Image 1 (cartoon, rainbow, N blue to C red):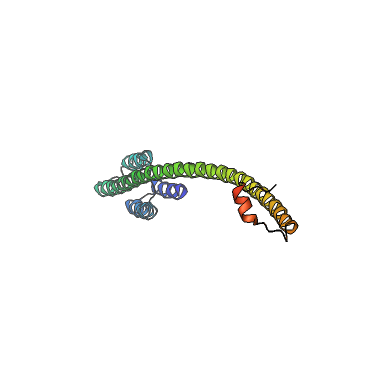
Image 2 (image 1 turned 135 degrees about the horizontal axis):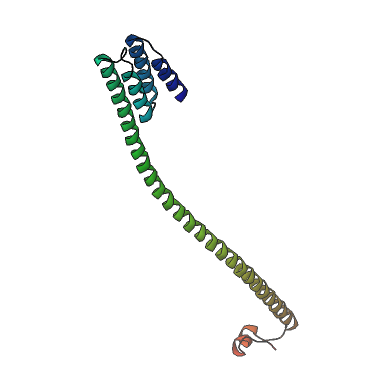
Amino acid sequence: MQARLDEHLTTIFFSSSIEEVIAELAKLSDLVEREAVVVPTSRLTRLRSCLEGDAKLWSKTMSQAVDVFEAQCHAIVGSLVQQLCKAKGASGCASKISDGFEKHLAQVQKNLTAAEQRVAELKKELQGAQQSSMFARQVKDMYKMEADQFELDLQGCDVDAGEETAESGGSTG
């Protein structure tokens, strides 16, 4: 974009008539407005100085044309400054939101790590409970087999095994 700006300025600097300068200023003005091109203050000052220094080109009409162009350039800069301020404000808000999400993410990760540790503990506890349950089943099965064997051995005797176990505290011996 700066190359196109330089092209127009160079054409103005080498123009030999007011009409050429004003026509080129109009093209430059259109470019600046359409593309929101920022013309540095130093270039505006140079443009004015070059035109003022040429007595053949400088006139009230030329002065007004340059004034309008400078005002347009300043208005674009003002507009861009406002947009910059809005963008910085939005960036600040987005930064705060992002920071909030980062903190939330860290908390969720911490919770997940704690949950994973708890799951590992519960798996160990489950494994222990399964082993205990299996052992208890084996003991139960062993005593059931023993009781079944005693019932077979005591077949035909007039003994009530339920009463005996109740009186003796559940032991057979």
